[in-house]
Image (cartoon, rainbow, N blue to C red; front, side, top):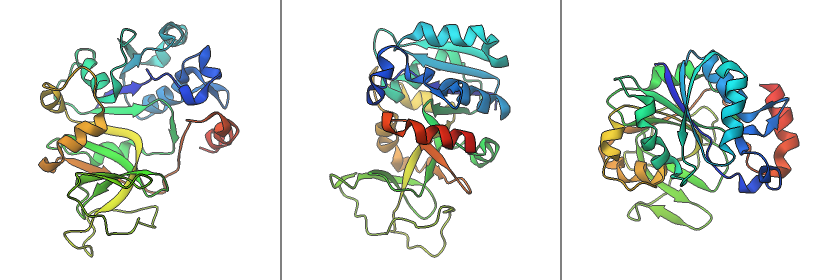
Length: 262
């Protein structure tokens, strides 16, 4: 597996006023932009060809990569300056640049820092799946819901009480272990386990065929929920996982310390 995509097209509205003049991908953390953190991590894991989608100040991202000789990678840019396509639409638009060739593709958000073992994630993925998504047992408001075998079965927003699909009943507690591992043989067949998405997934090339009828702009979360009946979307829970979403301006000092600790 040699190809990856980085979602870097977002406006970074929660990071204003910093993102009034730079894209979120260029936000400096511990001496280098978020994008550089991601590119170096992917390169060190053996990835070779990267597609980055761009929208907000795209020229800054392109110039940065070219000035650094693409960090020894083959980097292509998926232009979304005309319209932001969300995560699902952005991935599908990048298909021609990714040139799926039978190998899976790693897809990640630019604003997540973590200690994830990418090699372990790659080993966990199975080609018969649409996707293997990185999740963790952490406190948040929105959760994917998995059965005891780690298959995606739904989604919930605990703040609003929304559950998708609406027919589901969430009666299992949030897992307390940071190292939940599927399958869970002691669990009942009806149990659902809420785990938080961590901004990274591996997708199989067949995902583009399933995405074909979707509109230009759509969320990959909605796509996963539309296709969960197939049992082809699975959880990956990293061991000893530490991550941080660099989403709010008042978290930047914490992000500096976190990045240096990785």
